[in-house]
Length: 268
Image (cartoon, rainbow, N blue to C red; front, side):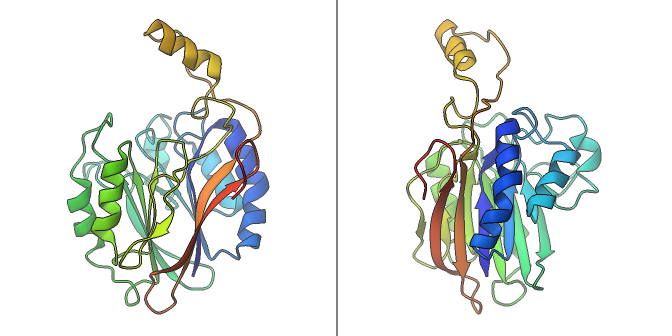
């Protein structure tokens, strides 16, 4: 299978880039399944149902959230019925929505997407993501009950995300981090065949401070207290993500490539 994952979409700039370029990249990579993290797509904070539908129309098969998944009030009401949107699976069971789902691609391939929230330096202290991964993935076996498994691990600490990659190595097709908005340079296939990258980066304007206007962020840092609400930067976005091609029999990675397309960053 050919899989694409794109990091946190930030504001209008990121949404426009997804709408314009995702169909192009889907065709270029002949992608069978696409996951987009959309947790910052609504003005930098959260996501709406309309935005979900726009991303789906552009080619996204699954949309993941993160620690900002509840920032838009409407998310509480539609996330339970909009099956393409996942919130982190290690939220308490009574939280609306789901954090893992089995999808069927257009070609009939079975793809499991698991979304988890890390613990270190995060505003929510949820259940252990490592134990949650073990429990939730127990029914699924690559090459048997599913053709691919994608894990979006949303977190701050690089060590925690690397630990999850090695913890799941050989059991899933891809472990990719999100949340920091900066793409890491460690794209690789781990020892037992799982593709990995500590953070995919963001889909947003990189002439910014992690996707937000520089002036507001700098002022907040300088004065040591919050002066104003962060506003997404509106320059041309770079789409940052990862491409994985898996073995049809095992579901493990054969190739993995970092993607940087458009905008300020060098292309990859």
